[in-house]
Length: 320
Image (cartoon, rainbow, N blue to C red; front, side):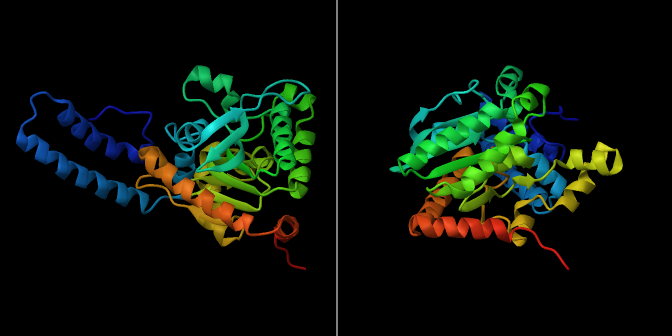
């Protein structure tokens, strides 16, 4: 039996054995020509298994991919997609929240104010980034950056990837709910184009606080929800293990949200999802961002604000 690897989700474990065989041959000093030919066969098997697994994913499995430990985070995109990144620190009221990254950045000669949630890889970084859960000063820093972008007429680009806003006592004592509400209100009327992309998990108000946009996109295997599947299951059934049922009911995947007209586009991920091919993910995201930028640049600011308001007002359905 192959060793269980935490960097592979439960349903990805069959891929681990094949990849281990490929790695063993590629790193062997005694590999024969026959072994090298076998690599091609193993790679074909790997592709077939990836296609089989990813062709029938449940909403709960997509939720797990959105949180994959090797999935690219905001700083990965900053490092490999953007140039001339100049980070902005602090909210000028309390401190600097490491769970939110803000700064000027350039993508193929186009300037942006880039704002994104940042999680951590190892234990030390997770604590440093507060597991990607911002406190009020994080959202106030983001709003300060947005106001700066408005002043210089630079488009705003946000990357959403958080379980939610931090629910601790210290965050509540510094008016977490007001910080989120202020961002929602200000983003609804800020006079510069806004593009938002859900790159992982978009959880509750913590995601919405940087998610009011002229164009809202989701990576193919990301999720966007008012509550996590586990949280929903805990409230409805007092049992977090029923998260798979909640995930199906919540309509949190990109396909369902596009069908409900709550997002504007789905950005395709590479074969086997973003964590299997960073370079392909960067290429797909880059082309889609530039395409969305062209769309908003072809619209006057007054029309953008009008359309943004109309989009917000159109959310939700009811029967009298």
